[in-house]
Image 1 (spheres, protein in one colour):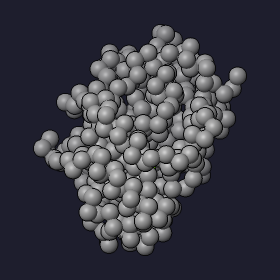
Image 2 (image 1 turned 45 degrees about the vertical axis):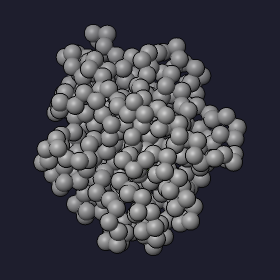
Image 3 (image 1 turned 90 degrees about the vertical axis):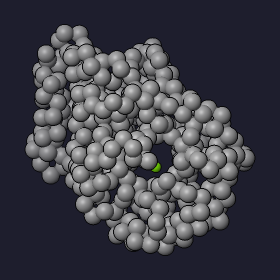
Image 4 (image 1 turned 60 degrees about the horizontal axis):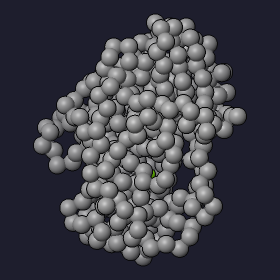
Length: 378
Ligand SMILES: [Mg+2]
């Protein structure tokens, strides 16, 4: 089998005026990502996603990957990571190279799965999981004044039993948001908080101690990803587990997080970390050191599908299936047609369970008519 075509497809969704999505760092007004479509000589089509701006992905693909990918057998997918480090020596490990690589890697795995008639998670290792626990990413800061209760009530109504909320703008407001979320979710649900790296270590420690009574499953990015000593300081002073990884990429960055015990949970984004191949290496390193793996998802339906396949593939070993800490997948609850409208059958997290597709490859079918509507290169 040979790859005959490689297309880079930038897509975006602009949020309505006044509906920006807020975290502790500020508001975002656009969901932008980049898909890659790969065709083979036997007519198989694979899809991947790069969590990076379209023009950067397109030029990176042209400069570094196209010549190697056209004519390649998709089963040689893991040679691409090596190539990313050897051919453009000195910058192969950069975030945009790894993002472009992620998209090509995911598309190749999609093709391999379709070619052998198996879902990707069973090719990456395979577990007996056929469903995953989705957690609602919600309670963003809003531009318009709204009751903070609304998004969490909606998540509970949908059946979520786990949720992650934005905090990080001051301890008093953090406490109020966490208390509200816990009240609505109930005592048995899992509640995570995300500071988006907005604090200095002492500020994060102050909030962490103040919200500990609300039983927090993890604190995400308390300090910037560039501040490992901050993670170390926080970890020594609080009991709540720490999580990070959405801003990290490649096995070497994750190795530091894992080996230095900076976090309890690593959160690779499949469309940035280097793809499914690299994520598998990251998961092996993490589980070997008894660090949990929970993929970060802030992607279109393709990146979400890759995260679902990846999450389903990660074994509990060295634990048993009785570990009281099940695999979870992030499921953003803000309106996003790039997640909901691009698939013939969108993922459905309602009822607090996410079915792992058993169809070959990523198990998704792209609605190409819908896709055209969100392209930014037309
Ligand atoms: Mg986050």
